[in-house]
Image 1 (cartoon, rainbow, N blue to C red):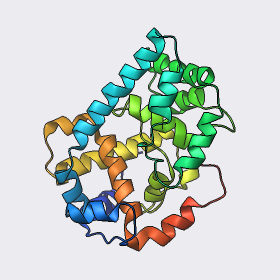
Image 2: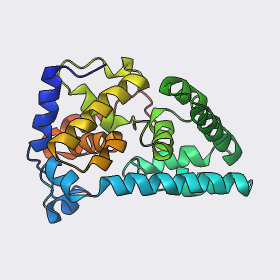
Image 3: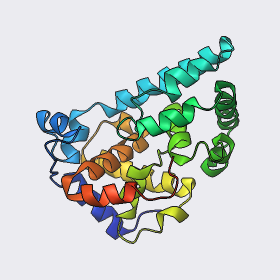
Length: 240
């Protein structure tokens, strides 16, 4: 599902658009202090490549440690309950309670199935998501988060922020009908547009999805979108 010309132009415009932040927003002070008023400033000023790369190594190390020690609690506590995941703000309590209520062995068995399948060459993200989810317990936001942290070069994070950003893309499909494979294709192309527009080093081509995640994040915290995003976030369908 490649981007249309109009969609590409919109993404480029969003990269350079100056943002406004509410003074009491939890992220505003950070953006203002660092003079990150556009996505261009943000990706030029933050080392997103190193974050994605080191985070990937950390999560894989915890995965291996959990296997070697035969202790699934290691992965649950150090990765799945890490408060620095993208659900770390107002949704973290809800997600934390949900994850804490699931036995570590069941969660880690799901993770192992996905990792084994990817290592054997499976690239179908929708199949991988179905392997990793626990019906009525873990949905897109939780499963794609840990999939992304293990494989930031392959899997996009699909949560309220990314769905909201996609929904505002000109000529976008109904976000509920977009497959993970389609999201990955669209967000990879968006990330590559950021790399070109911001003249980022060649190494960033390994992690275009990390950049796309930052586009969605900065778009959602813009004061001009906050009311619409809050309404979108509070929809009744289960996003976790």
